[in-house]
Structures are given as C-alpha cells and as structure tokens.
Image 1: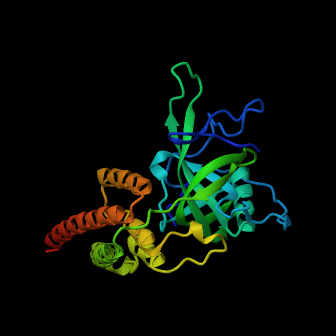
Image 2 (image 1 turned 120 degrees about the horizontal axis):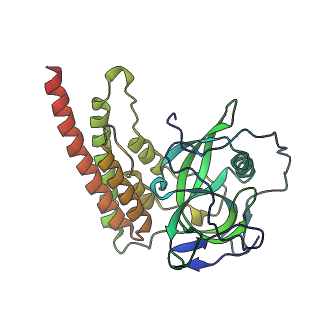
Image 3 (image 1 turned 30 degrees about the horizontal axis):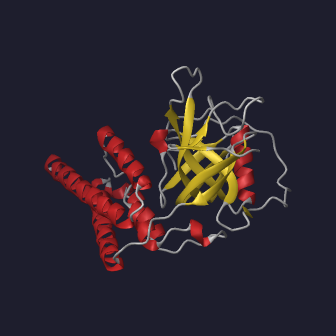
Length: 313
C-alpha cells in the first residue's frame, strides 16, 4: 500500500509508544517483527482480492464505557510517512488484507488509524527487528474509487491518537486508541492572534505557489491551502468529540505540507518538522513553528519566482 501520486489481546507501552514484535501463533499479537509495509510515500503494496460480503451490519464503531477510547483498524507506515491532522493523502490499496481493512473501516463510520512503525532496539541479543507504534492519527475516508485491481482511497487526518492496546493481528491490525489533544493555552488571545497570522501567511504562500506553476495547469488550491480550508471548518464526525482537535490546534498543523519545487533536503526537513509537530502538546508552540515554516517557504518561492522571471526574459 502506498499513497498514490494521483491523487485479541492487550498490548503494553514502552517509553517510545506501543511496542510490537513477532506475530507468530505462539506470541502475543501486540509485537511485530516483520510486518510488511511499503516504505514509499506512494501506495501500500496490495495484491488482487476476492470479493467479500459487506453484510456485517453488526460491526459498528465501538466506544469504551467511558467514551474515551475506540476500537479501530490500524494501518502502519514507515517513519518518513507520518500523517498530521488536516493532511490529505491518496492510498492505492490492492492487497487482500488492506481491502479487508478498508471494508471494515467503511462499516466503522469511515474511520481508521494511520500510524508509523519506529524501529527500536529491545536488546543486544535480539534476532528480530522490533518496532514501536508511534504518531497515530485518526483518519476519515473521504472518497473511494474502485479500480480493476484494488481501489484509490482518499483519506484526511483528523486528530492525534495513542494506541493503548493491540487487539487483532489478522487479517489486519486492529487496536484500541485514545485521543491526544494539546493542553489548554495560558493565553487564548495570543493563540487567536497567531492563528490569524498563520492563515494570512498560508494564503500568501498559496498565491506564490500558484504563480510558480504553469498557468494553464495551475490548481487554484494547493495542498497547504486545502489543509487550512479543512482545518478552518468544524469537522463533522460521528464519534466522541474528544477525538476532534480545537480550531487553533487544527490550524497549527495545516502548514506542514510540501510546496511546489521542494528539493529533497527541503522535503526531509519537512518530515522532521512534522514529527516535532506531532510531539508538541502546546498549540502556541506549534503555531510558532508553523508560521516560521511558512515564512521560509515564502522566501524560497519568491527566490524561485525571481529566477523564473529572469529565465523567461
């Protein structure tokens, strides 16, 4: 499974997050050693699949008694494919287990969890690779396009979640997750002013990015503006409101998107910024980083536009 260019038992927590190792029949299902997933930001490698009945009407979104955790399918990626809230991505799913995950997610209010597998060392004598499950993001399926082989699935990051239990290994991972939100800000006025500053900067960046593209092929809405427009609206989800971040928190994530003409080093820097953004628990701190990142991108695009203008003379 990769993002397209077109586009049961309880586990335990380590300091790095939920730890996983081998999924053999003789081991606990919250460990993974060789769980296969594609390391590229383009599609999960999935093969053709037999038709499955979707008549499991009894399967629905399940809340724990205190309504602070839910059980959902889990889709793993590698560390350079972290998904942040407000970000959109298109996946090409065509392996049987991921098609089963898709069908289950459609029955569960179109929700599942996107997370990354972070390689960790359990001990010097360990012979199997071990991973920690980190940077969980609740996602909603926005569109499914059936293909001859598999499907293109458009997803949107909603909010951060923590995986607290792995409940199922086959045919796909499933677990219990809890919402993670920022701490309440000390000064709401400071946060509000920085939200406005980020919005203004994103619109300025969007204008420059459109100019950098070929005029006839230009899309009036870039990825960063698409994220901001989504973040600026209250998401309509059929789940506990604790899983939906506040407006300032949603906006604080919207700037962490690639811009046209980014170099490989700039994309690598963006990945590091996304990881930091997922770790922050202060909205104001993330807004500051967002604003700095957008301003850097504005300067970068302005320089490229100047070069483009000279070359066209």
